[in-house]
Picture (spheres, one colour):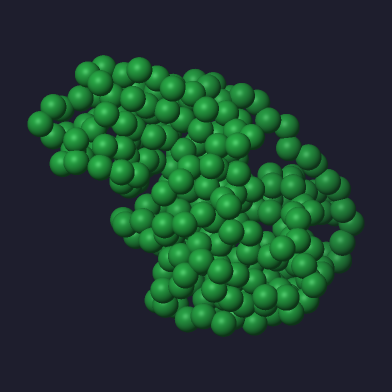
Length: 280
């Protein structure tokens, strides 16, 4: 699989015993994605990568290279974080790679809206909790194999018009940071799968309305939300570019648009970072 590194940072580390470790990212800041490549391996080697206190899934880039997608979550504080690489095989080896996360200032917006959009009614509390449990079970149970081969695609042709990580204050009440990118696409416009994977969720959720979640494998997920219609079924395998639904305004929104969110190894990352690194 080709790694797209235009307009991104790339660093290389000469590691012990012939290992070569490189990282590519747009920047080392919260909400960014780091594509870590480990070279100098044997075909039979197995590689374990840990970062931010969790195991990061590894997949084969070639016979002698493995890759890991390390997400820097929205809430990661600035500082130095160590990535550990352990190789098991005929020559067991261990190396480290430091990620120096720099500060990032996210935009804050203050809006006055109908109070119904700020505080859900008590009658919906059970549904909201059920939706949260469903999403958590999906994020923590990714497919172990990589289910895509080609580049990631923009799900709609329009540019993003809402910044990832924006902090919103509605009627004086802080909301959770914006964990995706919004695209001001016309109602009814087709929404395409950013890449191949299995449909993990295809149903209506309280906050995100008609929602499709695609498990791309190795800890990578796409959520496509606020759809007017869903054209896939849970458990179905889809290819890149497959129409999964249409743009709408379902859920807790004030107008039609597509919300695309990405999770990488449990971290919330900017979908535009995924396109910059692994896109067409």
